[in-house]
Amino acid sequence: MKALLIWAVLLNFYKLPKTGDCASTHDQVLSIQVTTHQQADIVRNISSQYETVLWSPTSPEYIGAHTEVHLFVPANKLGTVTDLLQTHLLTHQVLLDNTEDLIEMQTRNESSDPRSSASYYERYHSLEDIYYWINKTAQDYPDMVKVTLIGSSYEKRPLYVLKLSGRQERAEKRAIWIDCGIHAREWISPAFCLWFVQYSLNFYNLNNDITEMLNSMDIYVLPVMNPDGYKYTWTTNRMWRKNRSLSKESNCVGTDLNRNFDANWCTKGASNRPCDEIYCGQFPESEPEAEAVANFLRSHKDSVKLYLSIHSYGQMLLFPYSCSNEEVPNHAELFELVQEAAMKVRRYYRNNYKYGASAKTIYLAPGGSDDWAYNLGIHYSFTFELEDRGRYGFLLPPSLISKACNEALLALKSIALRVIQKTQPQP
Ligand code: ARG
Ligand code: ZN
Image (cartoon, rainbow, N blue to C red; front, side, top):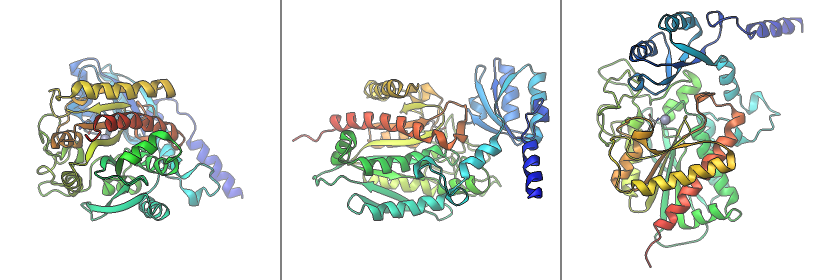
């Protein structure tokens, strides 16, 4: 008992507020305000050293003269980094000072917290849990869910897709594709896929929108497109983004799966250096995860009318192109769809989402799945960046999962129902 008490005191002591950044014993996430080109150089430099991890933007090359930079800095490098910032008159705020606590909160599961009243869908789940959930869901709803294996990851983990269907038989069913978890650290993304599946199954024949969606379209859901990376964020490095493939010419691990598709592959906005976060891989679809998705879509391209890829963070509803500043032929139509969806989210959840063509709304990012799907002929193609805008970033607490998912669900339904109208088969 006494030992326990001492333990508790020590633990709390460890959590006492710190006097200055240098004295912090915690890893932090800093928000750094860049205002000049020279400062941009400095921050680009810092962000590729000192064991820091760039949260936003995704790659140093996206840092310009007026960028707000979110940077994860490990405790033992905080002094060095903040000194450097001061020397170059860079102002910063501490966005997060309790990353360890947040990570602990996110990985707490049923067994260590048995009386937790939060429902399954308001927590994050390990890869093993998600595989179990896929199986269980298919068993519980045999008439509405079919599971297919579309390939496997670099480390040979299965890539399962759930096919959701309404109970009405219709010839020539159209389809929607949704993938989650391309990027490992964006945990809200797989959480959304689980949320969406559960919602669809629970509210079929209760909610008009989802009933109409499932009666006119099959919905393919890939809950974790990058299982190796996701696993790695649970076991080893919470900040990991890429997959876990090894490269011949370098010791660095991983390819950015959202730079590995064949859409202006590896041009400006991607990197050919294996150590970079936006490494495009050896060739288009060199990664088994990207190849599996591309193969599936190629073989279902006539039925799939709507492609959706779920990411975080930033709160954005994006459409092609990412790989070029050109406008797609149906730009105005896609713009209307995301505008309406964003308007609904603003009205019902009082939350603002940015929207627009990707390259113009964020940055050039070639090799993305949405652009590739668009060029394949799926002309309703979107990438969602879910909550938040940087308050917690990738470490969104479990208590905020439900709001993040509900508003994304509203946006998804809004777009899907419009696409159903627009792609009505001619009688
Ligand atoms: N933030 C994501 C990324 O860097 C998405 C950027 C938009 N690109 C895209 N292809 N939709 O990969
Ligand atoms: Zn992402």
